[in-house]
Amino acid sequence: MFIHALFPREAVRLILRLFQSAAAVFVLVVLTFPDYIFVQTLYPYYLLAFLGLIHAALVLVRAVCRKREASVCFLAGFTVFIITAGNDILYANRLLQTGYILPVGILALVVSHSFLLVLKFFRAYASLQENRLLKMEIMEQRLNEEKALILAEKATLEMLRYQLNPHFLFNSLASIRGAVIRDPHIARDMITNLAEFCRLILSHKGKDPSPLREVLELSRLYLNIEKVRLGDYLSVSIHMESALADRSAPFFCFSLCHENSSGQKGTVQGGPRERY
Image 1 (cartoon, rainbow, N blue to C red):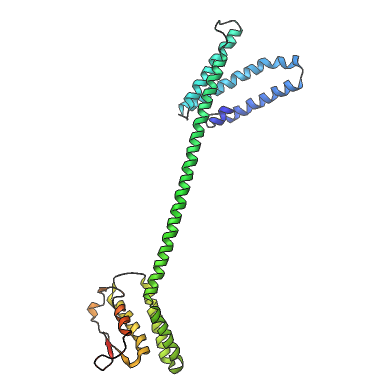
Image 2 (tube, rainbow, N blue to C red; image 1 turned 90 degrees about the vertical axis):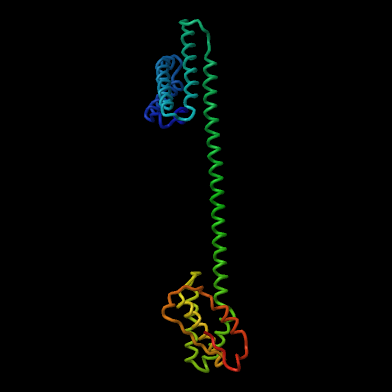
């Protein structure tokens, strides 16, 4: 059973079950019947033990042929044990004059077993350590990915905050509130322009450069909203040649100019301010 546990792919499970069943029968005979009866079963038991040793040797040879771990060392210890056991049997029957050397074989077998078990233990320990390090690396990688995702979300929110100027948004909403009662038509136009302005910004997603027609469309919507808020103070006129519509430009290249100029009160040469 021990060899079967070490080399399960080389052992035959059916043969193991037969040996276990025969051993169970011998144990019941020993425990149930008197001495003069179970003594008669010793020779069949010796035969069974001999067949078991042959099966174990065949398993070890197959393991060596398949280059299983430490199978050569185990087979060497097992071979020494078999030779010393055979020597002691022959010496007990006075067929040899060598003496009892079975303890040497048992020692060789125990040493080979111990070496195999220690090797398997260290391999299992190294595998556990490797799995632990791998889990730590996976956890660290997941934490880094989560941190990167959080930073990306923060960057996206920060970009949206810069794109949707809070002062412009608050001023636009205040102008819409004032126009709802005074002039509902103008309020509807402001809501439409503001919604389209937000749609353009949110659909941009940091794609630069952008076609000039989209850049000017963003400027047009912004200035239309500002014109309602500022009234006659602001006059808007945008002209673009059709050949320039697909030219590239930074998406927010005019935004800073609009925001800075809208924050300056007064007139230019005594008249309204114009933006191109």
